[in-house]
Image 1 (cartoon, rainbow, N blue to C red):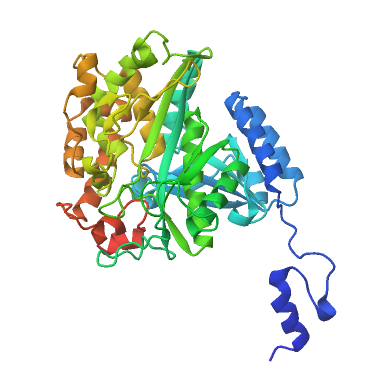
Image 2: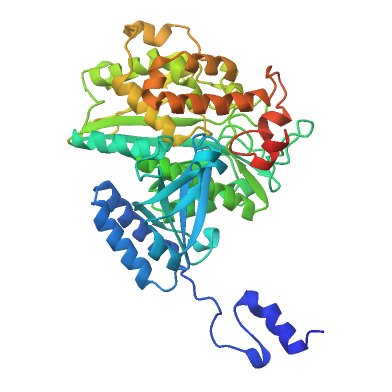
Length: 501
């Protein structure tokens, strides 16, 4: 039997104070909690250091000293992304990390698409430039986050770490005084109930929390409350918000933020999706980034706006060019159109993604470019010298952002020009992207270009993962969203479920 004073003390721990003889005058936990306005300032400063390419050793010294001096920090979240795009996080005790930050290891064989069991150990380096402070009410107090770089046993970059590959590409461009800038428009859905994806069945489907339409929501609707909360977190994380709103489909949302260098854009996307899922869970809901979770309505895309600059000049812009786009910009587009089928699996990596490429719902499934036609693979938005860009509309929100951005940049700059495309053909020709994952796999298998971009080993690994999920899902898509295409989706399922199949 627990005495009343002790029971009162136990019951009050969650509130931070003791009662009775164990009373204390201060909270038991004194972990770091920073107001959102200060978070934004700290994270924008960290972002500026990263964009200025502050030397890695300087950043390491700076942040290690900060961790050492800041007693209120209890743990550092180190995150990385597997070859399919699934986000992984590990929390390291701060004191342990300070001693062992240069010797972190993990079992790569436990991550699908990484190393095999007999060669399982991988190293986890820290990219100190990605250091960010976290909203404590979402991620918990006393934590900061940093992105990891996967290294092989000998300390060399691991070839299947697409974040590392994208980072190296950015450094190569920087040597030429060039920068690849990207901004994404990542759509998603808010569904009723926790773990709605893991518990999905095709008979009942998903339950939207909101039935309004484009830009249409009352201030205190669940969807609008979710969007507002997510926008607050993004702002605090230094995303530099632009606009947010309900999208065309019921319970669909989109939050836009400023363009930035490709690596940061991919990092921010992973944090965007992670934060959205946690904000939704706090409301008893599920944030879903499946491309087409409900049949008969618009799916979700991740329109990817891209520009290349050199010495501060936007190479995409030419006031006298067609649609104000330069010859460089049109060549970039033509290279993407020439390799559209080859790169399609990278941009649309799930069975479900091919439901979205449906011409009845503004789907960008036509291999052409246009300033106005939203069914085109590439759109040329209105722009000036600063904002001129191309918009690749075929990217699904479940794509691995590091692999997708890496592939788009490499293809636009170096892709084969197997066919010269005239201005008229760019707008009017009727060629279509693959209509299912099997055709996309077939195109990628046959592509020597994708072997040269990703490396043959990574190409084979990625195809193997995609074939594995395709075999667990219906070959004919039909009009019903099947249970297996959701449960075995790379962002939804867990390894236990895969082993039971």
